[in-house]
Length: 397
View 1 (cartoon, helix red, strand yellow):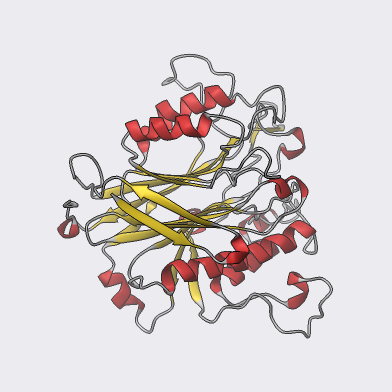
View 2 (cartoon, helix red, strand yellow):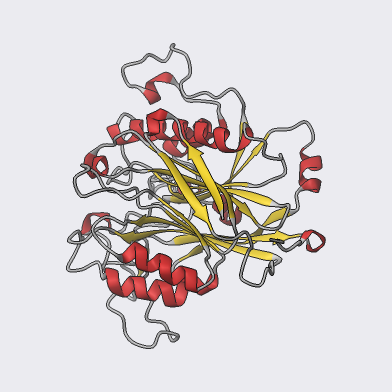
């Protein structure tokens, strides 16, 4: 048995241990030449919480286990809460039977702790060689009751080739266009700065090889789409101000002082800078050349009226928000010779296979009519990794 002990900075108030019973990618030691990775905000909140008549949690969990688990090799979930329910436990059991022998989740919370867990779950058919997690400081609105944070896993795709996955769920705003000085935006900026430090700690400062992929995914709650302007329809192809700030913080460039704290002046030093500037690639944007809608989507009915795409799970106040909140970001260091790193990289992203996963239900494949029209109130997003065939080496115990 391999025991992995993780140590996190005291500001996160988290220290934990996990045990791994084996070190092979699946029961027969075989390794695929392609790896399918999914991220989705599952909207699996604790009992008694719902937006409308019902969140259909049990039915959606069953649908996920039957229809979604078999399609992927690594799955990163947000809002898969453990608190007050056995659903997360049942999901982990079903995932294990489906070949996901390794998992890493937000730590459980007691009934009297004053908050619930962070709702993050990482499922993998490949061994998790190192794991860590962090918790953000207390947020605002209803988020102050959840230990939102980030999970990290160093995933052994082959005997000698690894990828580094981070999954996070940041502070929500509960509006599609919060003001730059809104409390939720200020908190999110701070969380991204902490996340960047966490990424550096787990990878850049921990002996990672430069050619190993770093992937950050999850519901980042930053709407990358500028607000629609009827006089200029093309504006939806741009970037929102907050999106630009998020990328600058993650890159290490930092943002202007008033954006970090409205009480500061523009003449003050930049905030949330990092010692090293890194590259942050938005894979969904690169795939579509715009920020795709992942929440509050719409369609045009036969009379030409714009209607909300999903109304069973989504709160009415969020209908037709057409927000882009969910991301897959590829992170790498700036080097003097990027081509050298690319040539040494043995695992690569197939950009053409990067896509939004809408998970509509009640299709011809479904056995019966379901009471919900899509898996979650969010769309998921997925990527495909390709492994150079000469580097596929099964694990040997």
